[in-house]
Length: 107
Picture 1 (cartoon, helix red, strand yellow):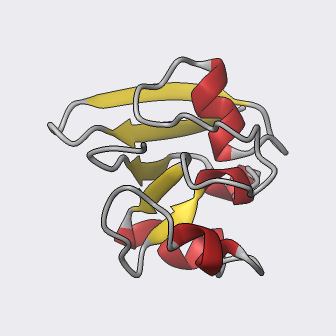
Picture 2 (cartoon, helix red, strand yellow; picture 1 turned 120 degrees about the vertical axis):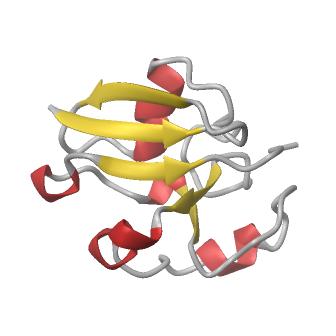
């Protein structure tokens, strides 16, 4: 299991245990995390799983995938250098404790 810490815009946190190999988006949806919609189911066809990777973890999640930049242009909240589509981040043991900040809105 890989522990994820979702930080909501109000500063509250939701911690979930997720399966290795699962995407951050799938883990959030499976655990009813408010703030991740995942409307397209992880097909990188929307930006409703937009999130901000905590700066301390940014180098461990890797660069944005091909096409991710284009999809982020449609995000409802501000896109920053730490913006990612959570459907494109696959969980590994090295990401245990990953901190993900949620945007103000997704739609």
